[in-house]
Length: 246
Image (cartoon, rainbow, N blue to C red; front, side, top):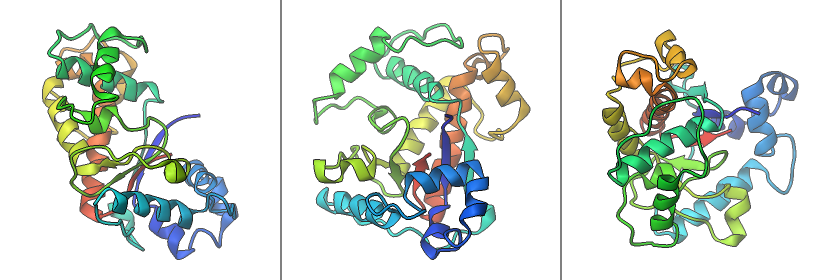
């Protein structure tokens, strides 16, 4: 199963527009995955309302504002995209770890070692240390397949308590902080943020990492992932909507 980003879709669910047309929802892969994951089709245990309630309970316990998802986001302001599977996030996280620890960058390529020593060193320095000042924590310490980024500014990823963890889907990140982190990584990649995430050169670079003339195109998978996260964060902040993995 692939990984997608979505911003601005949940308001339609809240209003019941899509819930009244389950056949149509099931026919669209992104909406179908969202509906199944968040209980649109009648799961009492994990329905959308209880998921958002658990999210807000966690935010309030952390001293943050509760999130109110917009009831309607115009079609042109919504955002969704297909990621480079789950590995795309791991490529970008590897770049973040090397950058945070001041290491010389690895050679770009399609393969990635999930036991990379520098990535492991990053997690060892941040995993159990609430006082760590290493950057990129909203990218690194958030889940890679589910969970939310909220359009609020806060310093650290918020971890739900055991009562809410399953419904929230893991840590809660700040879209503002993730945008800042990804903008920094775009600078490392020399990636122009004016590029269209769906541009042919972005896809070509991800398909053939290591062969481009520009730094960003050589690190094609990292760039593919970075530009998508930037756009998703921008839309989340612009519309006041959750950024979600699905």
